[in-house]
Amino acid sequence: MLKDVTLGQYFPGDSILHRIDPRMKLLISLMFITMIFGASTLLTLLFVATLTFLLPVIGKIPMKTMLKGIKPLRWIVIIMTVIFIINGGGEGYHVIFEWQFVTISWEGIIKALCVSLRIVVLVASVSVLLSYTTSPIALADAIEHLLAPLKYIKVPVHDFAMMITIAMRFIPILIEETDKIMSAQASRGADFKNGSLIKRAKALIPVFIPLFISSVRHADNLATAMECRCYHGGKGRTRMNRLRYQSFDFAALLVMALFLTGVAVASVELSSSLIGMLGFVYA
Image (cartoon, rainbow, N blue to C red; front, side):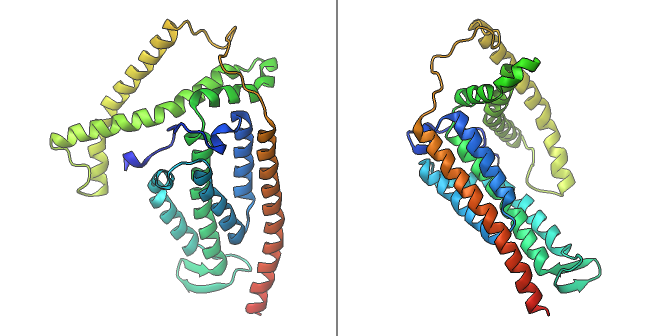
């Protein structure tokens, strides 16, 4: 399962998504997230999901890589879906089954599907846009550029951007380290797969201590490497590659804005139509 986590990994390439300016890619990602939560109907969410699954094709990222990234979410999605389905009661809801504390309605089923789809689409889209196709250095520069106005109120923008980038870079490293520790302990007789949930949770406790020590060691090595390269924060720092907007970047932002507007308008229209249709059926 740990090997399925691909968040934080970068896959070099020369696709359309790779060539978009990282600052514009951050704005596009924010608009995409807004579109995900702004899609209030199942049909508009399915449209957003279709766009999401087109991203790895545009970015020339293997589809199985994105699917591996969302695979660890399957239990969260299942639990959320069940909770929303069995608690589908509410004023004006069209109930199809009711027994004690379980109330299943059409609105509850649709809401469960929407919530689950939002989780999957959110993780998949952010992974493709900000992780798989954007290098950590470019992402740090983009965050620092976009938050540059905060420097005037004494906010340490450079330090903040560097912390986010290092945290994302450490995700695959710590996952790999955890997998190595678990494999080493399994070869010594540790059992992480069998037994009750409490027993398996207790078996993970010995993993945390070596993982913590390894994390501190990695952090210390990184700090030493940065000091050896005379890194002293953002003051007086120059960049080998300067970020420059191109007409292609603004075209991508315009396309994203059109999608966002279309989804917002369609959500309002479809919501009104769905309410009217359900009212007609149950009248």
